[in-house]
Image (tube, rainbow, N blue to C red; front, side, top):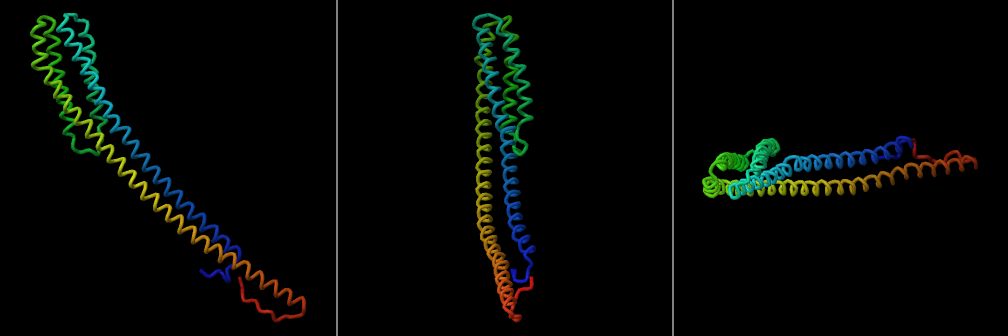
Length: 237
């Protein structure tokens, strides 16, 4: 770019404008990158982590319910049935929340559906045993061993697979986000280096475009003061 005949005002505006423009581009790019990261991690917290937490809460509830149901069958103390009923109700609410929180981008909901189905199957068995234990504890104990426990084991197995799948998907998102962030950071660093070089080159030219004309004008003024009216000045800006 030729600054020779450019006015000082335009030269300074161009120099500062270029610097400001590059700074704005870097800032905007950084903000976009940060917003993308925020969205990705918010999605992880609101869906992947939340669903995993709900899976854990389901485990806690059905284990508490199963333990109390077993204790009632063994001891005959029916006070534990209140806890069983309460936990089964909570389990139903948790299943609904889990289906709502499950990440929308995961199109394959097979593990989720299998886990919910296994919980529903076990819940029905538990409700039947809770009714039977009131009149026949021995039969209730047999139902726990033959029907309830296998259903509970099946639910636990599917729950483990679901939790592992969610964790794997979560880790993949974090890895992809870190890779994207590293690429974006590298691009920003390169842009900053190139922009710094360009700005320094422009600043050098601007300085020269101000210093050299000033020197020629000074020389001409000195010549005029000495009566020499033919001192050449090659700048017009």
